[in-house]
Length: 359
Image (cartoon, rainbow, N blue to C red; front, side):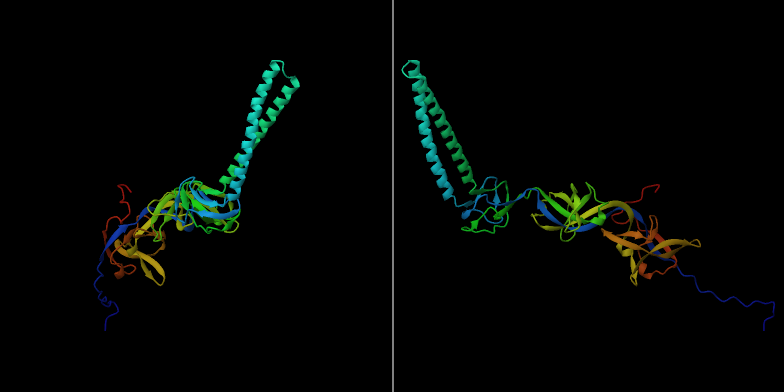
């Protein structure tokens, strides 16, 4: 039995936990785009629907869908026989008026000479000059009528308005067409633009010159462009604001009315980025380990983080970390919160800028 002045011997302590060697990486800031993806429609700056200016049966169909046409190339023809008959008839009338005009030209000259010689009266000369003026006016009117009919005859020949590609041709040879029949379309694929509708709640964020990226089906950027048109009105059906951005991509052939994915970049701001493999998940929560100092020693500190999108092989961190934190990037599966560690620098992350002296 121990005396009252004696203390019990201290319980033996186990060996101290050894520090686990880990690689650390200083969290850096990188420019990160705040963006949204939308479905855009590719349209041509020069695109027309070909509609005839006259009624009649299609007698010639010289193009098919997908054909390349040049400006002025004949594509279709509406039966011109009736109009051609009118032109021929008017040409005959014109020739008749011309012959009479030519006769009166000679006659008035002859009457002038006879009047000067005193053979005929002034009244006879006046009648000759009046007949000359009348026949001249008749002949000129006949010429104008013939030219007008020939111009109308040209409407029966449907030509390409500019160089482009023929769209769908829903009509067939022999069909009766009117001035409301859509024969086909012609699109010029050189000057394309993307039509993008953004929600009205982003109306305060849109502006001229904002970056737009045209993406491929696998999410790769095909072309970077900028907004050059901002609609002052809201589309009543889509309840969106129309943005237009020119598209000049030659790497991938784009066609009018094609749907593509477009990424609208709202802002670009520096944010922390961390390697994908440094993130752990448990119960739906994402967290990382950072090397912190506790009682003069380095320990692993568990931090809950909020992640954004990915950039290359890194996550964008929206919350939970700040620039300069020493992120543990190796052996995370063996770590526990508060566990002693021995940090070793792993160098800058792939895609991150190396810190400059003094930073």
